Image (cartoon, rainbow over all chains, first blue to last red):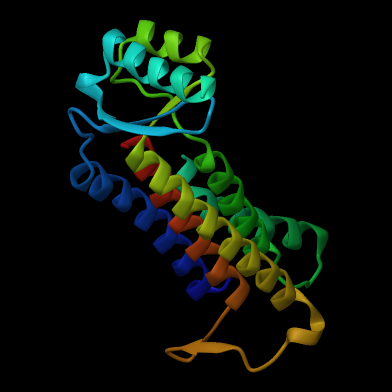
Amino acid sequence: MDPLTLGIAALAAVGAFGAKFIVEKAFRPSASPKIEVVTSDGEKTTVEASQLTSAKVEEILHKSATRVSY
Amino acid sequence: MLYGLPIYLYLLELLLKHFAAITADSVVGPTLAGAGLGFLLPLTELKEVSSVDPKVLRKLKEAKAVAYSRRDKSFSDFVWVCFFCALGFWMWCIYLTLPVAQGPGWNAFGWHINESFAIGCIMFFVSIVLTEIKERL
C-alpha cells in the first residue's frame, strides 16, 4: 500500500465532504431569482420570479404573437 | 458514502491486485476521472424553476416557451466549459497509465505521486463541488 496515494484519496474524500459544508454556507438561493423567459420565436425577457405572474406571461406571449404576425 | 469513492476504489484495486497476485499500473485515476465526468454531464441541464407558480409554468409550456433562472443558465454554460476541459484531463489520465508515459513522475517528500490518480482525485473533487453548487442555485 502506498501511503501517499492513500493520503491523496483521503484528502479528496474529506475535501469533498468539507466543500459540501462550505458551499452550503456560501451559496444561499435567492428569494426572488431573475428568470429568463424564452418564447417560441426566440425572444428573451428577463423578469424577477416574484413578478412572473399569469398577467406578465400573457403580456410576454402577446408581444411574441404580435411579433410573429408581423 | 459517495465522497469516499476515491478511497473505496483505491482499496478495492489493492484487494484485487493482492488476490489476483498481479502487479499492474493503477487504473483508479481514469476511473475517478470518469466518475467526475459522469457527475458533470447532468449539471448542464437547466433546472425547472421552483420559485414560480406551477400554473404560470404550465401556461408557458403550452405556449412552447421556456423559463429558467439566469444564474442557472450561466452556471450550465460554465459547466459545459468544465466538461470539455475534464474530457481532456480524463484522456491525459488514461495516457499516464500507458507504458509509453512512464517517466520520473511527480515526487513529494520522497514519495512518488501517482499522477493519474492525483488528477482523477482533483477532477472528482471539482465535480462534487460543482454538483453541490448546482443544488443551491
